[in-house]
Length: 149
Image 1 (cartoon, rainbow, N blue to C red):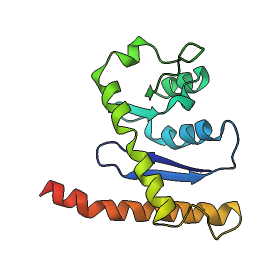
Image 2: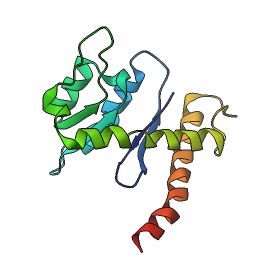
Image 3: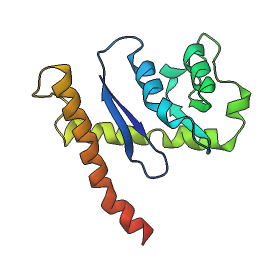
């Protein structure tokens, strides 16, 4: 299962990894990727979908001084994200922009050929996934350079 961490301002993948698929792999990978970036002077936020709306994940992010901008999952239960997060305008922006990561996954699957990898073994597939994420960033750079001039 491939995981990617994207910065919202430019839509670049800043970290990517591969894990064995399990019920908790996505949340564990997200915590591992955000941890080195959480102790920054500027506030760090993590936008994610409803699968990440668990008390353990939200509390772990808050203990790392990262603000969880996780979509609320209120179907049949209470959400771990409360009003202290959702009342800010940044939460709404983060929820809108978090969908950009799907563009990266779509490119990695279709253009980079990772929908059905030719490699076997977690190390080789992981290397190919990280390489594809770096190639995605390279395709984004010309668009970003035109926007800044």
